Every structure is written in structure tokens, then in C-alpha cells.
Amino acid sequence: MDHLMFCMQCQETAGNKGCTKVGVCGKSSDLANMQDLLIYVTKGLSEVTTRLRQEGKEVPKALNHYITLNLFTTITNANFDDEVFYARVKETLAKKNALMAGLSNKEGLSEAATWDSEDVDAMLKAKAESKEVGVLATEDEDIRSLRELITYGLKGLSAYSKHANALGYDDQAIDAFMQETLAKLLDDTLTVDDLVALTLETGKVGVDGMALLDTANTSTYGNPEITSVNIGVGKNPGILVSGHDLADIEQLLIQTEGTGVDVYTHSEMLPAHYYPHLKKYKHLVGNYGNAWWKQKEEFESFNGPILMTTNCIVTPKVSYKDRMFTTGAAGFTGCKHIEGEAGSQKDFSEIIEMAKKCAPPTEIETGTIVGGFAHEQVFALADKVVDAVKSGAIKKFVVMAGCDGRAAKRNYYTDFARALPQDTVILTAGCAKYKYNKLDLGDIGGIPRVLDAGQCNDSYSLALIALKLKEVFGLADINELPIIYNIAWYEQKAVIVLLSLLYLGVKQIHLGPTLPAFLAPNVAKVLVENFGIGGITTVEEDMKMFFS
Image 1 (tube, one colour):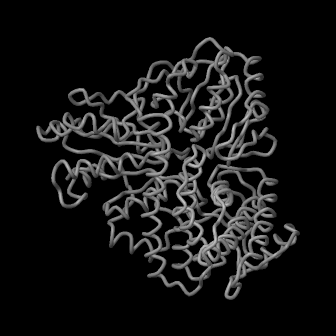
Image 2: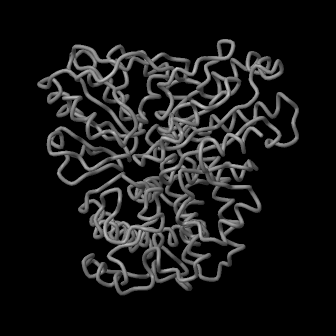
Image 3: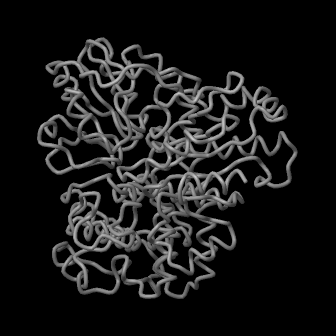
């Protein structure tokens, strides 16, 4: 093998080409290779489940959840625990072998479906010499690019599915599609045109996945409401919850009630404050800190325990590693993991007891931030918004959803927000909002100039808002709306959002701070020619481009 590893799934990948020795995210080459192997054997398992469905046999819900979690654990910054992947590779092989016995027809199965070994170490050695496993296993650049684009879309879709599963919501059609598509990625007969079509189909199912999660969240916790969230601190000891899983924070809120321990959100968990069923807990006192990449200093000053519910982990400092806990798809070697399958009751007592012995959080800022502008809340303001557009008070909406990151060039989005004309409104979701949600950008006739729909998982709201505006103004094409798309991306959930927008027909989307490394020149050309995908330059030049 030319490299110790090869990974190009996130925006920070080395040189915008690929990490080859160690991941910029902090994962070792051994961990990266083990994740590649898990994806490979999961494709093999998915080929078997797909064949079972073709034979009219049922695939258990628990197995669907298992495959979904396999994908989710490999998302950037989700899990850094080597033992987790070692165990899941063995378990995946065992599950696949057990299912093989139920197949009536085993003809034509791929190497991934038939490969068998109980010795994972031997498999890793075989992987290093194999042309079957890993990103570079596909030699044709265009086929490789499309396969990776689809794979990363499926990883993003797995996140939506997992969060919905945790709240008791499932869609067997989505599960079947993810598994069937994983199996298709092993099929060397598929052409570039076949894979382009499969890419758009992944976007279509991405919309279904976002809709499923939206239904799960709003049915369980109510529709988000406009909410002013405290960013200061109280006098009680606290627990800081980061990540995206609302089911986890709800269980923690229930278990901490009456204990004298406050609960704070961090980064992508901020929108928990917007849901009526969660904001009723008086000890959910505020949001501490900013986006995920600032956690080293913020976790240290928080003083109490931290619960990481999903991805967005940064290698912890020794000073707080012993009070950082993980659960679900998240993991880090040396951090205590709270066990529990999707939808199960978890025991957070160890975290709560630790919190009682810790000092209250150190205050790092004061004030409030406002959010809760998901689709139903914006629909309630529809008349006001339409009047503002018709009167000219609002000239443009700018979708600035997506991800934040540590690169200095991401300050572009802060400067871009500041430079926007006063008659523009920002529509956002995801941790990209931390680049501008604490700026004083004012309002337009009482409508805040930053409308935060929630997590990156809530990008569906932005799509529904756009479709509603298209309907209200009687437009034939969503691209006739006065909406600009200037989106920051970082990891694989942003990929499924992009594919979903493309499926919905949205064009002229600009991505930054760089275009994905996994887009081969010919694939990028297709996206540019068919959808107008573009990058970013400077704030000054992009202002001219967007507002000329």
C-alpha cells in the first residue's frame, strides 16, 4: 500500500486531497483502516440483507439499526475507540454468516459478502494487500468519486435514521435503500451514468430521511418555538451535553430533575431549548460555548462532566478527559461509555454523581441568543414575511446552513454575514451559525435577520420554508425565489443535505471553504454544468456575484 491510510471524507482532509499518515481529525492510520474494513464488511452484510428481501424474507428491525449504527460510527469525529471497531467488524461478520444460511440463492455474491475470517488482525493484513477494501480500491477516478459521494451521503442519512430510531420511528424503505445501495457500491458493472442516477436517488431518500427525523422530533417534543437562550451560567454544578441526540438529553433531564444539577447544551445541542417538551425542564438552564472545534478550552472551563451523544469529538485534554463520557455512536479510548441501544433507557447516574462534586461552570460570556425558527414557526410568520418581501423590506434570503470548523478561512462566513445588505435575512441550521449568531445584525420589521432552524439535522426545515415561499408566490421553479445558497460544509451530514437539495432541483449552491476533495474533476464538472455548484472566493468578490 502506498499510504498508511487514505481518507478524504471531511473538509479538513490534508491538502484538500486526502489524509495518508494520520487523520487531521486525530484518528490514527490503524483506526482509519479499521473503519474502512467496517464499511467493507457492512457492504457485504447489506448485500445479504438485500438478497433476503428479494427472496421475500424479513430483515429484523434490530439488524437495520445495527447497519445504520455501523455507518454512523464512521462519520468524522464520531468514534475514536479502536476496540469498538474491532468488535463491530467481528460482529458484522458473524451476523452476515448467520444470515447466509437463510439464503436460497447464493450465486453471484461479491467477495465482501462471502469473505469470512474470525481473525480481524489477519483481515487487516489482508486489507493492506487487497484491492477490494478502502477508498483507493476503486481504480477509476470517476467511479471512485461517485462511490465515495454516495457512501458519504449514506453516512449522513444514517445519522438522521439513527436519531429517529432512538425516538421509536423507523422507515423500512429507507433502511432497505441504504442497504441495497451499499450492495450496489460493490457492483463493478455500474457505469458513471448509473452512479450519477444513484447519487440523485440517494438525495431523494435523503429528503425522506430528514422528513422522518422531523416527524420523530416534533411528534415527541412539539414544534420548535422562538426562544431566547441564556449563554451565561448559574450557581449550581452542571452537566454539559454536546452532539445531536435529543433522546439522550431528554433522559438526562429526567434523571437530573430535583438533584440540584443543572444541564447545559453545547454546540449542536443548542436547539434542544427550542422544543416545548424539553424547555419545560427548568434545570435546562442555557447554552455553554460555541461550535464543536472550541471544545478543548470550553470543556476545561465548564468544570463539570461532559456527555458526547454523537459526532463532533475533538481529542480531549488530559485535564478533563476523566469527566468526558460518550454514548451511542460516539466513543473515545479512555472515556467512559454509557451503554444503551436506540430507544433504550440509559443510566446516567455516574455522570450525575460526578457533577454533584464539581464546581459550577466558569462564566465565559453573558447574554442571550434567539432561535427556534423551524418550518412551523416560520409558517406562523408567513404573512409578515410575505408582506416584507412584497414591500421590498426583505430583498433576499441567504441560506448559510452547514458546519463550522477550526480553519481560519472559515472567518469568511462571519465577515460575509456582517457585509450582507440590511434588507437580507439569513436562514441557518447546523453549527455554521456560531460564526454569526452572536452578532448584532438587528431585524427587519420585527423579523430577526438570523433565523435559526436548529441542528444540521433540521436542514429539512429550510427546504420546507423554500417550498412554502415558492407556493405562496406562485412560482413554477424553486430557483425563481430570491434565495442565495452559501453553505459551509465539514462532514457527511452536509453531503446528504447537498444531495437532497440537488434532488429538490435547487441550483447555484455555493460550498466552502473548499469544494470536497472526493469530487473528481469530471464529477465536479457534471455538478457545475447541471446544477451550477460553485465554491467561494473573497467576501468582496462574492458580494458582487450574489448581489449584482
